[in-house]
Length: 141
Image (cartoon, rainbow, N blue to C red; front, side, top):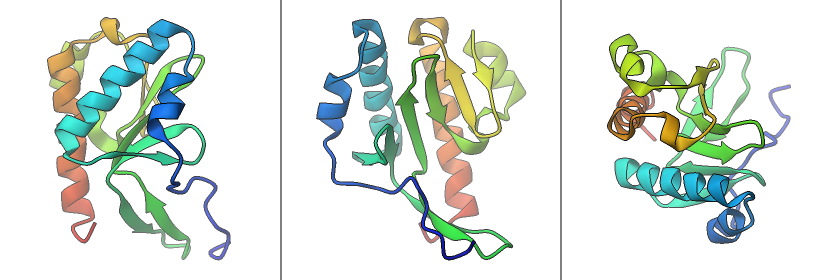
């Protein structure tokens, strides 16, 4: 298993072309806003990871099993069901999450139906917290 390549890898695909193809228009507007916010907070350019994830920065991980690979520090994907933000442990601050608004979480994801459902200042801090954690956890990245 350690030798199996990851499905999601950084590509040279155009982020702009990906964003331009998102439908409906409201989802596209939310994706563009999240893209701009993540670029601002991370200081990194947007890159495509696989065919449907926009990521910022990268880190290298290695599991105890020997499996290793690279992944974006933060990223998002405008899925049909929700705008999915990949923020690893960024949503573990209970006080901050109480201010955020309407959302759902998974192990390393934050799911938003629409960007207007959440407090933008709180969202920016959630992303910043994730990046701070990742810098400590993966200092070589």
